[in-house]
Image (tube, rainbow, N blue to C red; front, side, top):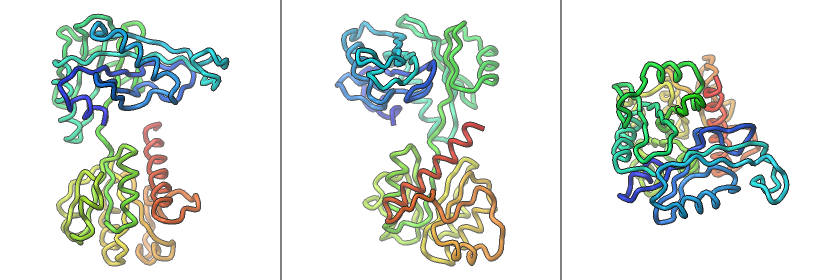
Length: 328
């Protein structure tokens, strides 16, 4: 979302990135926030403690700001400190950079990689000059503005440390920009609409598939990135799944669910969720023992009732499994 907002107009904008956190904080290293020239802000770096001050600093410097490293000490608990009495117990180091038109063009290439499902490693040397040295590493090569980039050292650092990583000795910040994780919803009934919306707002690329044209529409799923209106057998035979994909099956049609689940269990997916009772699931699996990444009844057990609450439980469970993978 931030990348799209950065590229949607011609005005230069300021991208603020947390490069290091000492102690604890609301957001971790790698979190970004965009400050547009018209005053619009996209993203969040804290619980609202420092954004206003950061915006004012950026505004006061105006076009004179090429780059700046700004630190906020959130550890103190008095009302006069940046902690604002909440005691976040951390120091946040933020790198603010005015994105030039040249770097925007490079970010367009980054977006192309992400849309193709390919991750990009971003390398920035924290320095305070208008030129700025940065590099983007993709599966097919590298691009950016760093003629004499120490590629071997960067690649060694990227493979050695858990990213994002800030190397103080060289002032190099390395982070990995991942494409949006995909959530594939099998079934476009009314109960799936809150799930699609919440998942999209939580950072997922949502794909909805259903064989009923009256259900699978943009008006019902305005935040979905893709709508596939075909019968399950055709979708399953033509769609290219990824090991990072998440899928939720909720067609409310027993035979279709059975076909979909059987096919999904034969593939390498990160998460498969099935909506329905335990008895229905047992009947549908027909005695087969499901793998650990199969969840049914789908969603965290929070006593959810109704489509909206069930959507919250499902997205929470998906996020839990995704974060667990990131830690590993």
